[in-house]
Amino acid sequence: MFEDPSIDKDAYRLMRAGRCAEALSIAAEAVAHASVCLAGHALLASILLKLGRVGEADAIVHMAAKLPAGTGNAYDGLAFVSVELAKHERANTLYRRATEISPQTPRFWYNLACSERGFGRLAQAEEACDRAIELDAAQYPSYLLRSELRVQSNEANHIEQLRSRLAASRLDSHGRSFLGYALAKELDDVGRFDEAFHWFARAAKARRSLMNYQIAEDERKLRRIEEVFRHVPAAEQEGEGSRCIFIMGLPRSGTTLVERILTGLAEVRSNGETENFSRALAAAAPKGRGDMFERAAAAPALVVAENYRRLALVDASGDCIIEKLPTNYLYVGAIRRALPSAKLLLVRRSPLDACFAMFRTLFGEAYPFSYDFDELARYYAAYDRLMHHWRRVLGGALQEIIYEDLVQDPLLAGAAIAQHCGLAWNPQAIDIQANKSVSLTASAAQVRRPIYGSSSGRWRNYRQHLLPLVHALRRCGVPLPQDA
Image 1: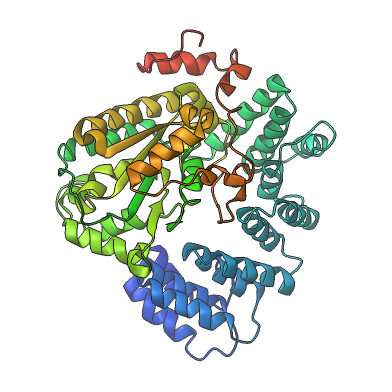
Image 2: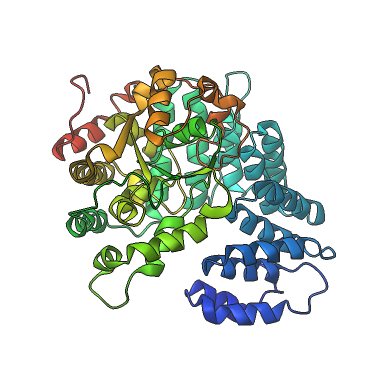
């Protein structure tokens, strides 16, 4: 984002170290007399955003974009901040501006492709991916993004190109993971499941080799959350969070589908997958008292709520606001304390489908447990235990949505979700392919198609290959179908 000599390195270093208050004045001084758009403007806006000064961050981006033309890096950085601000149209324009100024920079074409996918302009996204790959054959994320844009066919795919790239000498683990997932996805599309699993497994192993991760630490964290949030307040009729909807669940469990249905209703908007709540909680937590979990539990509820309202722009309109970060399941207790009237939606998918869907997905830095069957099973079991805890302490305040029921009868399930959220139901909301709002999740291309149920039971195409996962889940006490 900030690969530009015009930014102040001290401000950038301080921001990375979490010392944003110190970084702010340095970053502001660096661009105070700028006559053109600089990457330093994006740095300044990012610092303001991290400080929760959302309006000021937006004003900086708006002002900088109007200055005489700067470098491609400047517009790419402003676009990144615009995405964080949910100003997606502006982000798209800025990403496109970066490619116009620096058309030989493959990274800018990849970023534009991601933006185009978010708007459902899948053909344009594929063209941008192709351009990035033409400029640099090592632009590995572009291969995977391109493969995910559509269901590949026997007549139109990139299988042989991907095989050729994977056969290249000196291909590092980074390249093997992106190319391997891309090839596996395309082989799965055309029904060559044994070959697909071979590449899913190789790609997952390559990705896991790049990570320093201990599953035991995650298991400990989930246990601590249960310990410090033994009790949560009773529901209120009205109050803090009455217009807030939190959609959560394991990744690839159907959270995006629920979001798309709800944003098809009147007066509902989504902030997407933001860290608004966790940032609000961290800012309110007292310093120097116990571990991070005790501090989170001791955070003053009113301060957390005020922090969240500011970050999420709750007061900007009268709309209901969706937060769709899957891992908000970690913060259910804290959300309930700060926003006791918020609607909590937990999406649940059958264990094998959920686990295999994660295993076959290349995530960013999140979900490091998903690349190894034993770690995946252990995390699923720890997650499931925490969900049982939330059910016990919240009762009906936690609305569970079964993915399989949702795709089988979206009209019935969608109406029930809307009723729980206090929203007027419109049957047209299930026509998610007609929903024009931006989606930046891993399901961004899938939600441009009508609701389908073909992913349910998908693990059965890989039954023999998934036996180690089946055994690991059963060792962890996770109930599975008889035919697993």
